[in-house]
Length: 332
Image 1 (cartoon, rainbow, N blue to C red):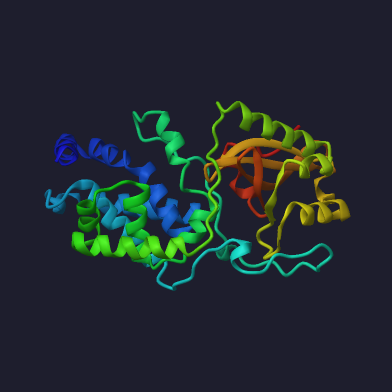
Image 2: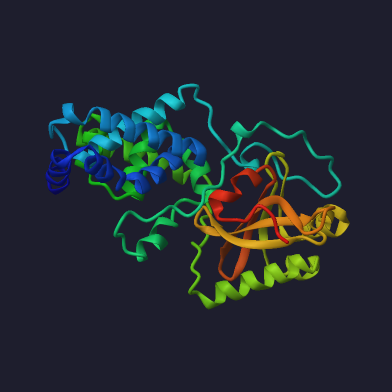
């Protein structure tokens, strides 16, 4: 009731203040829509549409439900309309068996096929910085990809209950259903998710000395083009993939064979700039330019667990996203 009272008070003061109050929900709505859609760009569009509809319909809202539940109802409908085709985004490992060294690459697939990386979700106004670590959990590429295999309604319920920690009655209000139906849907969603192999990495923790040291060694090995040193940092079952190609590797030794066999040639002379994607340490990869300096080449998302790197995803067509990751357009 507190959020409704505050919203009504802001709405009475004037349009600008009411709109500002709705903006407080943008950060958590982006996280929700991204998990629903698997695309950062589509999530931004969905949230903008949600807030626009909410502002336009605010006079008719009249406090019939909690404002937060009302916003999630709008956001869910927007996401479902954007995914009416039933198409789900995926990772390379969701589409093909692991490749082996020497196998010819398969053709690149369209952008709409892939789970897209997302920058750190912004904190809500006045939020506790400790919430940032929490927001990095359960937004890994593997988890978001696994969510796409649930039905849209199962996905919505599981995200709202298990990720965002909304109460069952709040979820029921958001989806215009009953608490009993929410509990039943959540049970089915959890069972379906448990049937998929989802290995979630540790979230990025810049204060963790061990994690910082591991990443420093990775950057050093990568920039020296020392693949023996780089491979030594990988878990024995690590994966490596390169969207938009449905090509991926599993296992430290297979990755070693590909890199030492010439598969890492494009990395020679490259530099890495740190950022955060999907709650994990990530890097903008820049390669030498014929005009001097370094130009954007790819966004590399590394996933860490137990003192080892368990996954490396190199998004080759993500250079247009560099500004949203606070990465410079070029290195001198």
